[in-house]
Image (cartoon, rainbow, N blue to C red):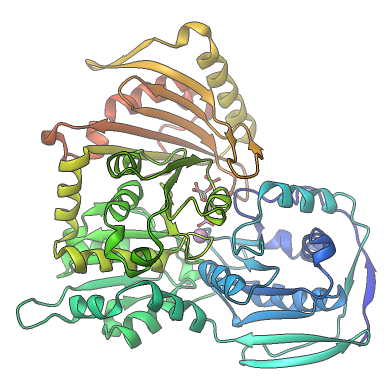
Length: 560
Ligand code: VG1
Ligand code: CO
């Protein structure tokens, strides 16, 4: 077969955000829209494109299969030698990263809008990952965006049609060269990697119970996202868990109407089931499988920032880290600083990076980083270059098996040693963009006044002294690249922080995120409700930002 060149029209706004290009499905369905972005992505590969191998898969949402078909046709026409495609178009984000690394491909295309709802009237997304298995860094996504602004045509072979529901290898001659499509088992490579990393025997013993210990009861909820088949293989087949404890494990195109974001608001079902049921542990994952939420008995909530710190403190219980050693820890800037304390105490290197997993990759590639996380329910390690929900769940179970304690006691003991960073995030979704920009502008103007430093901000008798403020910028210690304007920070003398930033993953309007982090080392506070402890700082933040006046919002859409 031969390739065709199709003249196209330019679409504005194909600028990848924190994690790829995310828009309404209807936007991607416009004539040439998806093709343009795929062509630009391939084009950005430059010299690497001809003869390369790429991985393709997505989270099972509506339009994934359609997009896979188009990518196959466009890749064939652009000189790609081989595509490795997940069966049914299914690959979790961590699985794509695993496969890119294992088969040393030049990259991969991930079809997902992560935790955004799916279906014909919801969202879709396309993300490019590089040959290290991680999300494309800013210089690559900027290049893709630049290309979309001038793209005149794309190349395609419209009459290639392949059954992607069947595991098979197909070879087609394109312009006199072989073009190979490998449709692979979506879970095999990932499950093999998990078995190398964790002590499955001890996790199995924990979950099955033994003569002297009752079984540790777990409930897993895949929220109808991509993790279902992975969860089934790992927890049912490998670890012997009854399938009644594995909920929503069939990937659905619209996630069954769920908003597949594992937090206390959108994963309410899991929270309630654990509150009322006999379970010792619960976990949920997002649409594309890179986020996780961990709960203990009676739905004891582990904040992602604490989850990171606890795993950091106990990494040596996991076989993978016994082998590789612990090279360093990192967190994204808005993430509460709990892991920083573990780093100091254990003499381990520590890094703070902007929001988005792409910033961890270079540090890992340079051998500086073993474990990292974000407050947005993202946890992961250098086993791949994406955050990894199922990995985080297994890491917790491996640690619990090693410590022989409940989730709650692990946290209480952790706080006794390190103190507790209370954390909350307020999201104001779908605000008017102009109002949100104006608010950010005025906060910046306010905090940049020279006399703002040293100011004493008070609420109901509690006082915080401003120590430092900035619009966060980051210089990569490996390649020197710089990211600026990554969020407004107000840092206080006692280590507490207020952060404001605008989301880079929304598909319409603006989402304002307000992050509050406050450190306490008095043990009487440890078991108190975060919203209570943080009330003064929350109110200080709302007042100085005039958020309600700017947005007309009285309350956030989501609190975590
Ligand atoms: C959000 C989170 C960020 C995360 C990103 C992608 O970005 O805050 O921590 O890395 O989503 O996660 P933003 O720009 O909306 O705040 V995923 O699971 O959507 O790929
Ligand atoms: Co995700």
